[in-house]
Amino acid sequence: MWLFLTRRLRMWLILTVVVPLTTGLLRRLGRRLERRTGPTAVSRALLRAGDLGDRARATLRGGRRR
Image (tube, rainbow, N blue to C red):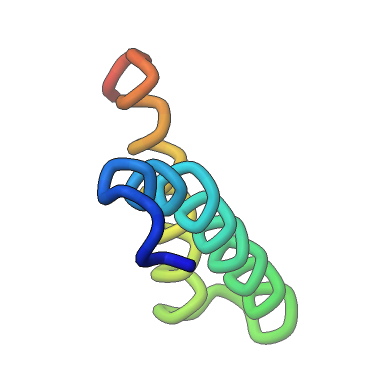
């Protein structure tokens, strides 16, 4: 099915569907790990990866950078 979609449409689908789902999943895993074992390097990295997706989406929408 991917063969029939244009490159631009594939990129749009990845950026609008796959990336937000992935960053949300990483954030959820980081929170769950933090609840079980407390803050660790792995849980902080997972939470940062989830926040990175939020910041990228805000920047692309024209939001302010911090």
